[in-house]
Image 1 (cartoon, rainbow, N blue to C red):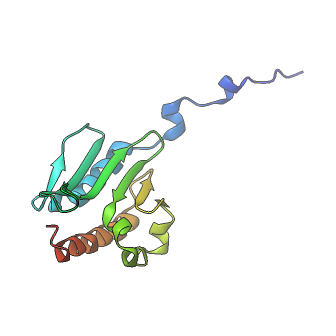
Image 2 (cartoon, helix red, strand yellow; image 1 turned 45 degrees about the vertical axis):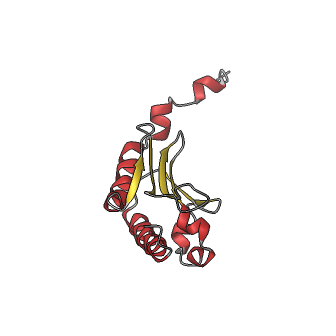
Length: 137
């Protein structure tokens, strides 16, 4: 007669379970946004959080968020406000990238994916052009 394993015995340790390199994902997404730092302001917060906002107040006396990256427990999130603010831009999201979308402006990644990151970089450039057209930057 075999002994039934407990739930704790069948689970793998968290590090083995995930096998994900979230810092690499975070860094790759952050590198995507680095070129925009000269036009936007980096919000200092925590090492696992990176955000860019407009340098001046453009909406109701406050800066407008451009993008943010947050390293979470299950994935790294890329929050991209131009997609939220511009419904036309949502139509430009490729189907492969749309599968990574949660909500209206958040894309979740658990690994570096060069093809998806290229699509996201192109979308980010288009979003920056929209901000420029709105005179946010």
